Amino acid sequence: MKKEACDRDRIRKQIVETAKVLRPLVSDIAVSLYEHPETGLNEYFAADKLVGILEENGFQVERGLAGLPTSFFARKGTGKPAIAFMAEYDALPAIGHGCGHNLMAACAVAAGIACSSVIPAGSLSDGGPSWIVLGTPAEETVGGKVIMSEQGVFDDIDAAFIAHPGQRDSVGGGVAWASHPIEITFHGRSAHAGGNPQGGINALDACVQAYIAIRNLRHSLRDDVRIAGIITHGGDAQNIIPDKAVMRFTLRCTDWRYLEDVIIPRVKRCAEGAALANGTTVEFRHHENLFRDTLEHPVLKELARKNFEYIGHELNQETGGGGGVTDVGNVTWVTPSIQIGFRIGDARGHSTDMADATVTDQGIDATVDAASVLSLCAVDLLLEPELLAEAKEYLRKKVQG
Ligand SMILES: [Zn+2]
Image (cartoon, rainbow, N blue to C red; front, top):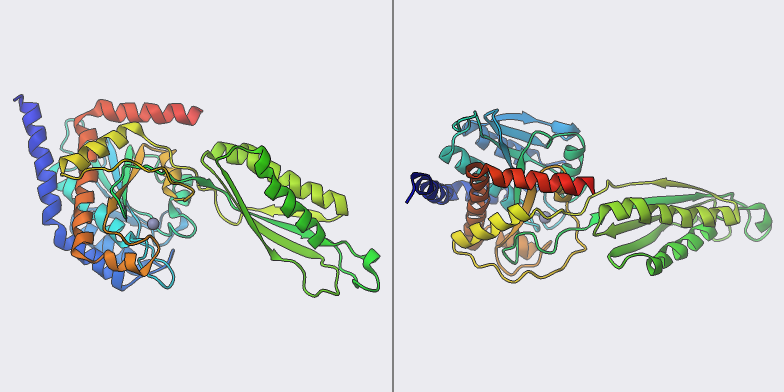
């Protein structure tokens, strides 16, 4: 065997061994966060815990990036390439870690420590690599990664990895859709509905007309579109002509450009048309950020598949699915990145069963394995720089459209 191949084999074995040694740490993170669940942007306990562990392991940590106090950027080394593992650690109201983000935090920290101990920062001939563990808060609410990627946090990162627990191992099948919710407000004029209806301008009438027009848009749009809405304010009393009506729509599509360039302008035209017809005025507000669809990165997907097999996990046939949304999508348009899925049992996502499954032996073992897979992928990119170059070129072309 050539020396290079032999080294590579040794490095890969070391990664898996090191991840196994980190099992108690993985368990400690998983259990502590499970016992202290915090919702988006309140994850102070989790951020403190993770930062403490990373500092003890030699990472330099900057906190509060992009105006998000519970975010952090933990780094070892300054050379290139810079490879990041993304941690999430927000919980859900009432059901705690029912989405298993405590395991995502444990996985990212374990991968960062494993990689940096097997291939130390700065040990490559050109001064690389640097290892990064990125604390990305509030995935379930505002989408920390959306804000962080908009503010350039990922600009210097050459590849980013993340692993989400669930019912199956996967390498990104059933990818997330783009979503850009919109709030539409109509302003009219109030008047006595019985005595002086002609003196009013009915904002609710415009709202209802617009609601119907917007829902009917689906007949002339692509199939991969979801338009769902509710009227959140329709007046104050039935004997007053409503001077204000408000509705909220969630607009989703598998393609963020189609969402921005076609769907949203047409939704606005429906509302403007209804407003024009009855003399109200209309205003629009995006009450949530644009979450982009997840761009699949074939190079990373193939590496992940190979590395799941390397540690003895067989991947099932990918099922389609979709319609879900994640802030990882925005990252996939900025740097080569992948979210793998790892099986912790049969519990459904967003349930107390799922939260409980995260602290079982099976849940912890699966997290250790996921950390191995992500670490092996990262190491592959270092040992085969042409793969990283290919992944970057692929992204460049996709961004150009
Ligand atoms: Zn989740």
